[in-house]
Length: 436
Image 1 (cartoon, helix red, strand yellow):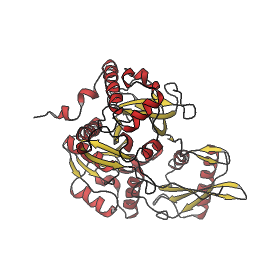
Image 2 (tube, rainbow, N blue to C red):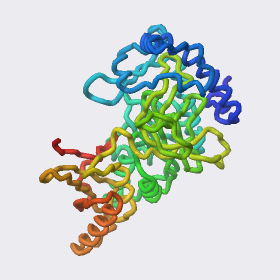
Image 3 (cartoon, rainbow, N blue to C red):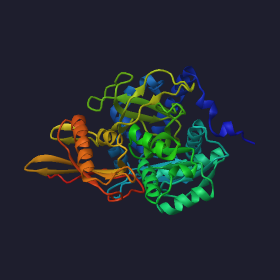
Image 4 (tube, one colour):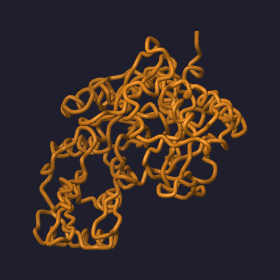
């Protein structure tokens, strides 16, 4: 019988830095040789005069080219495949609905590795086989649902594959089966809480201990607000379909950065403009190379996500380096009146206020060639005395704080609770109707 520790990869989880360095050198060398079996990388290496056998250690990674989302589209459907198609057992694609998707192909070993990584993430938070896990994320081609599902089952948890939406049923299932852990987008977790409050119910009464949140950027202020509403601990999760999906990096109980599993992923942080490495602690674009992918290894993938490596050791004792919370994406940055603005900067201010609910929208338009930003927020039920004068004062305070945050005037619209459309998946926070 396989011991649970083996099934969740504890031997990798507790490696020393020296052991990790040795493993990464061997794994990277094998990965590059494996990638060279694919039509795409073999052609790229040949064109650039790269000998795959010359890559011996992580220091050699700079000799290799970056891979972009456009490369994945150009190589679609099987240009990066390195094994016999008969040995494939899973396909996932990007969540886009138009154009050529990015397709990631998996062997049985790839899926087993993914489940191990995800189980390792959940176990790190303190979850175990006694927990009941309700998965409120989408399944299908989206990697989030199945990734957490397989990991939770590997850990021995009872899994409720509820999927997104049908909020009344979500609440009933948690209550009836005594759910202790949930997985959802931050925006949907907030929606469930606000729905309960509007109906005179208390989210704390659900008795949930842990929430695993991801699939969309969210701020520390949003985390603190959710923890206050539910009384659970929120663990930040990072993943992307090109690197399997969730399970790339996860928070430990310290809740101070996400440990990226360096036995499975080689991490670089580069300047998104120059593509040169940045210093530890400096924000840049995350670049990742798979180290345990068999069917479709990917080399130096430009994620477009902006983060940094947190310096210092984690008190939890794990030496896998920690990624800071994603500050946004290099290709999602808004330019408003010549100012660089990330939606997370707006959320940071909004979530400080108890009188504001968890839903908001940033609306961009133009008026006489000048960019206009309107932030629409909802009143939080039970946090407002009904006075028009109070609304004016609250709006003025929010206007002042947002102007200080972004450097220009922002229009504020305060709406009744439930006025904005609720999101069951990834929240659409920005509506850009500017014409250029």
